[in-house]
Every structure is written in C-alpha cells, then in structure tokens.
Length: 114
Image 1 (cartoon, rainbow, N blue to C red):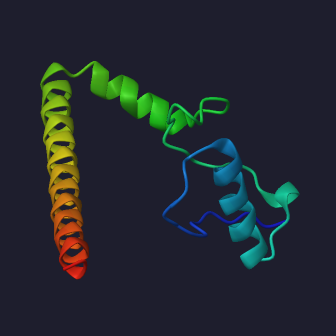
Image 2 (image 1 turned 30 degrees about the vertical axis):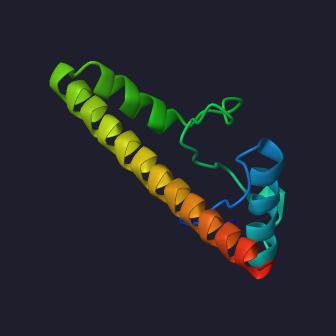
C-alpha cells in the first residue's frame, strides 16, 4: 500500500456551507479522481462552526499558539476587522447599485405609460 499526501481540489462553495453541501462537494472531488472513501485517511478543515464534529488537529494547535501570543492575537483581530469592514462596504455598494437600478427601472416603467 502506498500513501500519498496532496491536495485534490480547492473549490469555492457557492451554496451555503452546510454539512450536506460540503459532503456533496467532497464526493464530487472523490468521484472526479476515482477515489473511494475508504482510501481517505484524513481531511483538513478550517474548524468552522459548521465543521466541528472532526476538528483538524494542526489547525487547532495553530489557533492555540496564536491565542498565546498577545501581539499576534491583536494583529489578527485588527486584520479580521479590516476584512469585515471591506466585506460590509462591498455589500453596501452592491445594495446601492441594486437600488439605483431599481429606480431606473421604475422610471422607465413609469414613462412607458405616457
């Protein structure tokens, strides 16, 4: 028996990150590579709230190490806040663009009656 270490795929989940959707994506990747489930030894996850049943040991150790480093924890928290701000800003821009498009559509629709 040979053991291989590697990444088979990195796919964006366009659906919600439920265990069902993650599992379907995982099975699609295995099927693509013609790999049976019994051939898989370990799966690495990010320990997300939706994937707590089998946490990744390495990721957990990394997180514990980060938590014990005060300066690093502060830097990570600041970085997370920046990312949240950017995501929120993008959502606001997208929302305002949608509102503008709706207003234009309403004006065009209104003008058609005259």
